[in-house]
Amino acid sequence: MILERSAPLFAPRLAYSAMADHQNGNAVHLTDKFGRRITDLRLSITDRCNYRCVYCRSGEEDAQFSELPMGDYVRLVRVFVSLGIEKVRITGGEPLLRSELLPLVEDLAAMTTHSGKPLDVAITTNGHLLAKLAEPLKQAGLSRVTISMDAVDREKFARITRVGNGYDAVVAGIRAAKRAGLDPVKVNAVILRGFNEDQIVPFARFSRDEGVIVRFIEFMPLEEERIWGPDVVVGFPEMLAILNGYRPLAPLPATSPGETAMRYAFDDGLGEVGIIAPVSRAFCGACSRVRLTSDGKIRTCLFSQSDHDLYGVLDRGGTDADLAAFIAKTIETKEARHHIGEAGFVKPSRSMVHIGG
Ligand code: SAM
Image 1 (tube, rainbow, N blue to C red):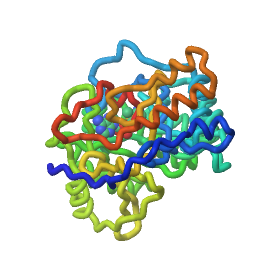
Image 2: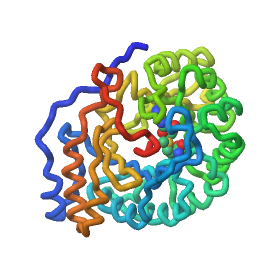
Image 3: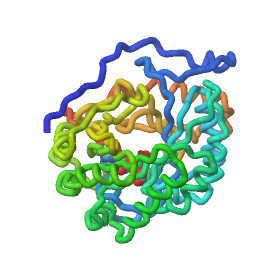
Image 4: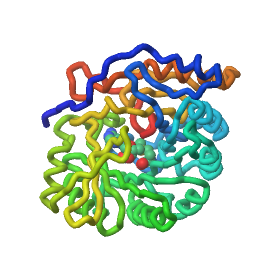
C-alpha cells in the first residue's frame, strides 16, 4: 500500500500562556504550539476488557489493571473543562465494565463548558453490556455512543474478538442504543486484510438496515501482538472502491473541524458510511484531542513515546491550579503529527487498550 500524507502543514507559533489567563480568571482555551485548539478529551476509565480483539490486545487475560476512583476522574475532567474542553468521550479498556459508570456520566453531563453549553459526553464501547445500560446511560446524560463491531458474520466476529458469545449481545446493544434515543449511534469496524475486508459490503447493508452510521477504520500499529504491517492495512482508496462497487457514494460534509471520518451517503439516501484513515490520510493537522489514561496520565498523541503523570500531581495534594498548570504545560509538548509508515517509526510502548481508544 502506498502511504500518503494529506495533513495540512502549519507554522509553529509562540506558546500560548494559558496559565496566565487561567490565573486571571479569563476563559482559557488550551492551544498547542502549532495553534491547534484542544477541545476534545478521551477519558479512559479502565484498561480491563471483556474482549480480546486481535488488533488490540493479546489473547491472555491481563494479570493487573489500572483504575482510579471515579471521583478523581470527575475532578480531573472539571479542570480540563476549565481549560476549554467541550467534549468528553469515555473509553477504555471496556468502560461498561465499571459499576459506577452511571454516576460518572451524571457528574460529567452536569458540567458547563466555556460556551455555556453542557459538556458533551459520549462513550465508546464494544457494546457487549449495552442492551441493559443504553436507556440508563441516556437518562444519566449521555448524548452519543460509538460501538466497536468488526464483523457482521458471526464466525468472523468470534475469530476477531476471541470470545465465543458476543455477537447477539452487541447487536442487541446497538438496537437498544437506537431505542434509547442516543444520537447518533455509530458502529466502528477496524478492517484487517485476511480477517474482515470482506465485511465492508455487509456492513454497508447493516448501516442501511439498522439505521446506524458505520465507519471503517484503518488498522494502526497499536496492538499488543505484533501483527501490524503495511500489507495488513486495508487503505482508504481500497475501502472506497469496495463501497462504490456496492452502490454509488456521495460525499457528505464534515460535521466539525476536527472530524476524523470522511463521510458518505449512498445514492438513494439510505444509510451512511465513513472511512477513518489515520494511516494513509493522516488528519493530525486538525487534531483537537488529548487523552487521559485510566491511571491518570496525559497522552498528547496516540503515538506519543511518553506519558505525563497528571495523577501524580493530584496524588501529591496538588490544587486545581496546579493540575491546570500541568495540563497547559503538557499540551505545549503535543506532537505535530505521527510517523506511521516512515523509516524510524517507533511503536508506542502502550497498546490501544492501555491508552484508551
Ligand atoms: N472497548 C471499547 C471498544 O471496543 O470500543 C473502547 C476501547 S477500544 C480500545 C476503542 C477503539 O479503538 C475501538 O473502536 C477499537 O476498534 C479501536 N482500536 C483498537 N486497536 C486498534 C488498532 N490497532 N487500530 C485501529 N483501531 C483500534
